[in-house]
Length: 308
Image (cartoon, rainbow, N blue to C red; front, side, top):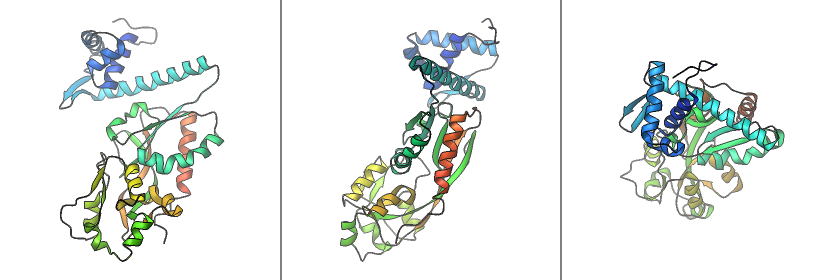
């Protein structure tokens, strides 16, 4: 390959590599680019030969980036996305400053969206793209500017700022709570528990809640949900008891649609953090959204207990 004015390899090779890295698949990259898998492999091989380093390896789940490949992908994805945003702005005839913010479905519905109207009113020229998924593997660091996540606060290649800590406690509908007004924490295993099959390993389930509450229990039956928000809807409908994450249920508790049950309250092992990729440049729009989220969280940082 011949280097161009900016000492870049072939732009076709770079675009092909970016697609393969984004999909972690030669086949899917070929389908996106409308070429054969062999053509994709040849472009990547030529790029690796020019750079003198491997960009891909293999693991149990298939195609994997090397350290150098991950760095190159992060830079290319950021550059291509910013170029696409600029072209969209040119086509639209007006300036746009899009920022991609990622978080879970539960956090988006229960905390972020009710507060975003303030941001939109204060910064109408900033376009926020929301990437919402409960699959932690669905986030690629190179494709998001900011991410709100729950955990211990230390993630590879990410800078994190703690937003607030969390507490958890059982919640039920008012009618369910009235029917079981005299129950104690020890009675929880015998009641209908609503489980959330969370893909995030940091999520706390009923087994851990009961163990940390020193409540003996056998294997726990109950209805299972793949979405925390849907589990809350079932809880509000009186179908059982859910684990209430205070930051996510506080508005429901304040409105009276959910009621804390038994008095059991535990400090959650993790906290909510705002993170961003330390390898990507942070533009003015990203900084504005970051500072707004931190400011919103600061007003609520000390509120960690349910209403009486």
